[in-house]
Image 1 (spheres, rainbow, N blue to C red):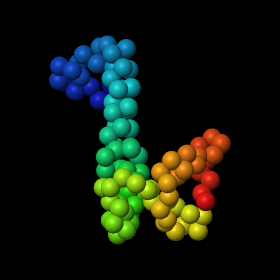
Image 2 (image 1 turned 90 degrees about the vertical axis):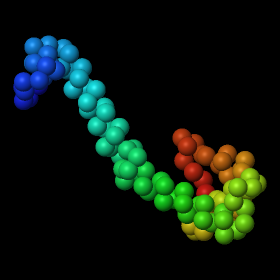
Image 3 (image 1 turned 135 degrees about the vertical axis):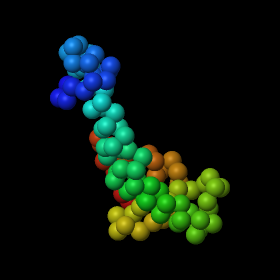
Length: 101
């Protein structure tokens, strides 16, 4: 490891290079998961949560929240409209590209 300390684990990793490599790989994956774009407080999660909150607010405004039924769907112009759930979720074009109505 870069800075060999005096703890038992740092002495272990200083003398066991393969073990240190495994730990570094694990630490990289952990930091990516916990601090990266998909972290619970990361920028992508914040954006997705904000979009979900907008959809939920629209469902509440229309009086269809928690009732199943139709989905709130985006149109090409960016407006929100109600649409049959199967049509809305089935409208994924080739390679998963959306084909907004």
